[in-house]
Image 1: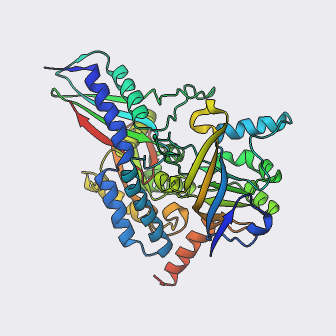
Image 2: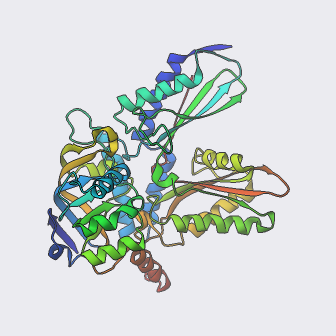
Image 3: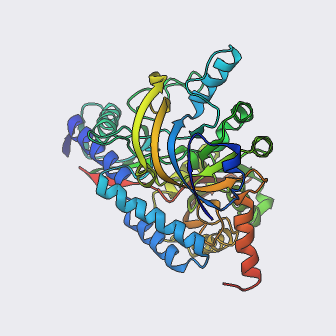
Length: 189
Length: 279
């Protein structure tokens, strides 16, 4: 199935999504990776506001390359999401609706995705130029000292993503390879 | 005797940093093309096609292929007849500094592993130098991204574990890595030597074009067997399932201690980058 979604994302809009579905995402996506997650967690510990409204938000684990003159962004493929696992359930409990990245997540994140009706979406790993093509605007909104790890607000149009973890507990990294191997056994290919 | 200046080296390194990050070596592109043609699983075939589209788009838009433009791993073969005017390592660092700035490449290096402040110019380069006969200086820049680097592993096996133990460790490393290193992967494998040498062998193996088998028929057969086993795991492109988990692998071996069997796997992705130039 293919879904067109626009941020902010509601639990109702995400409910029908299943692992393996395609999502074309439009609206606002915030970038955050290792260092930004650490600082956001410290803000929460101190009772401060996060750099962006988390309710219904989509976070993209990415550190883009510097933009050339005349371009709004450089290459912008996903980084390995598992490094953010220890920070993630707390953000999902606060209303984070979608994470964009690549690679396997911990059981705690999977459980939290189901509990909160959220999704984990896959961007194409290693395809930095392709993923950048759907970004229309970029603005650094927090921690410019972090360089490529600063928090950026991206306006995206039809960003092509694949559902990796869905609200019903589906996991494409399990079901995808299993389906392929089963087809080999049945000599379907 | 040939005199080579610090400036010549810096210019060459800067050019190689940009070249390596914006166009893939011919052997990797050919392997990706062949993999897509031979891939039986439709979703996997589509995914491989998108990775190829990305290469085209990167070329057209002068963008890096991957946003992780890596640590600048620089391999130097220094002819013993060369006279260097200036400092070799400083020349290379300066080349990295210039190349990463001029090429709009990402600065991904922190100055200290625990205090973690970005150095801001992607230096230092990680330099390996070898002395060779002759009067030529050959430099290879092989930018290495962390998504795959983090999935690399090293084991000091027992000699009794033998080749079966080595195969098991390599397969286990691939299975544990799963989707994290952005498959299809490329593997550099070191076997033998010592704790430090085996890691170097694994990294060096990634410099060998993946269509060139190990010159020793025993190791060439082992490379082929491992590739087949890895491509039977079902992980597939991006970990979404399929045949193409690994585009190719290279083993480098060397003598070791009577009590040792070191094995190291340096994991890389389909964006296995290297660019070489000589002075």
